[in-house]
Length: 158
Image 1 (cartoon, rainbow, N blue to C red):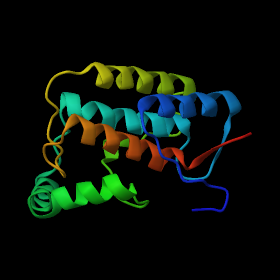
Image 2 (image 1 turned 45 degrees about the horizontal axis):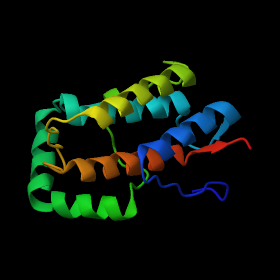
Image 3 (image 1 turned 45 degrees about the vertical axis):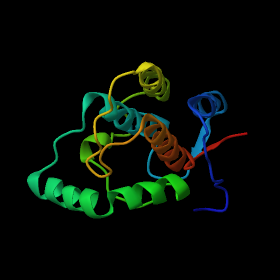
Image 4 (image 1 turned 180 degrees about the horizontal axis):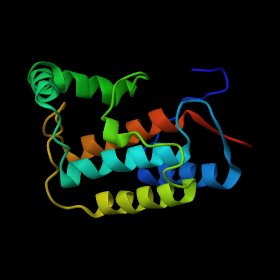
């Protein structure tokens, strides 16, 4: 992490949405690989999966995730919830967007709509391929930690 970056954490979606709006209003310096549109699109995908279902990974990946889920999934979830996400971890390629795929404003608006959908969702959440079944509270905290991880690479211009 560069000396200009600050650690972020969000206690709720309102704080996250305030940060997104601040980045839109003030502009930002990109200190990582993704701009705001790429970040919001990626986060949007991962926020919808607990409701709609996770993409089906290739068989070798599913086997590996299943082994991790059974042997260390709960422990890994607790560690992630306690200390956040670490940089450099692989992600699903379909959740990585081209720089010019969407404008920042459109991507953030799509993400906000998914946040509202998540807030209003009363049904069961789909089990994570890595962590298994999660409580809505744990899923919320995981989503907020994921957002903080990615958004700390975008520094507001002010």
